[in-house]
Length: 477
Ligand SMILES: Nc1ncnc2c1ncn2[C@@H]1O[C@H](COP(=O)(O)OP(=O)(O)OP(=O)(O)O)[C@@H](O)[C@H]1O
Ligand SMILES: [Mg+2]
Image 1 (cartoon, protein in one colour):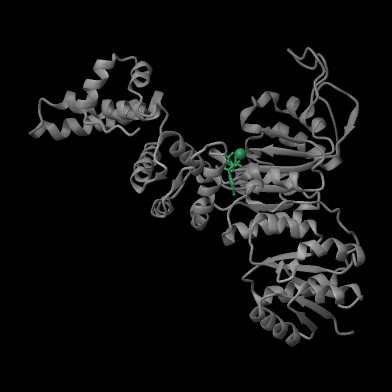
Image 2 (cartoon, helix red, strand yellow):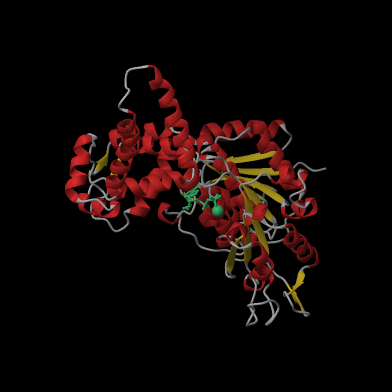
């Protein structure tokens, strides 16, 4: 076997040296360079069997020459190295036809494994080109943590494929966002993106929603109606909350995925499907399979590529970027842009975010809407976080569980007071417990506007004022 030659274009001298050593020791011939011009020179002369390239070089951006390289040498595998570890870099690398994208710092063994794999496979297809702006404003996904890097790499690899993806992750981790990104940056981007949420549709209507129905198929079916499969033709079908799909619909879905065609409810003619499936769930499907609640065969059909999104508490280093992102989104048209102090960001990092990115997004929205200060202080943040923590601790629906919670509380109180002191104050203690948060939260909801709060509560303004005094409620405008 002949020795393979690797062209290594890397601006950083230290990385260039280490990689040269590692690759040479592994038996490759390495041609290192620190600039694009030399790299292009070699590549255009047909030299090298593989290219490893950094993105930002002293004489330009490697993404700019990649279309030329791809056009001239479509079968030259390219591995992109980048310290700019954003979603867009990963996507541009994949769009530029790069074989693999490696965020810095990387592991030398990993580089060797990828180089070996890339050289073993000969790429035959060249991908279509597209222009992407790299600006942060249009970046759909934010976060540069290692956990997100892994997600971006998987996404980048999936972009030019039609593989079925199963996205899992806790609520609010960005499952829908990922499904949309797979579509928007993938090869079906010109087709439709159609989403259907199994948890939001009555169980007996799911099949008709998915596959459509003929006129008169069931009571109430007064017209022929197109299903989501048909709507998504040529595009992507996002099956959200797939764990909530009833068994019968699962069986039908499995058949459609196996056969690539379906019939409408109440119809006879078969319709061919041409959709890319992305499914998502916050449930543990393997557990549901073992409990007999989810079809195992369907699970394997959907789980071709599993993609697990990390919880926000596993990547707290992304909080600052996310806050900045949401502040920008929220205040696109605002003249004075509010900021959050660095200390306040630290405080946000101490919280565990059970509602993940969505909870953080909601908090930022609330901060921008409710607080007038240009720099949002630690004090405000700790107040807002205390509200979040409270709602997390008492996780109940008002109608049923409030009464149960109160009963527990009152019975404790009664036992305590049987013996002594506060006898004669039980009534007021309990009422205060309810009234104080009711008043303070309602006022807060209306940004300190007492007239609106009084009207929402159905209280006289004077009464409200009196209660604010009694309970010593602090009003934050
Ligand atoms: N990495 C991210 N960068 C920017 N925004 C994000 C990111 N992840 C999630 N978001 C935002 O957080 C919100 C929640 O995301 P999304 O709806 O995709 O979550 P989900 O996992 O589908 O949640 P659920 O399970 O509750 O349906 C959205 O507004 C989304 O835009
Ligand atoms: Mg969702």
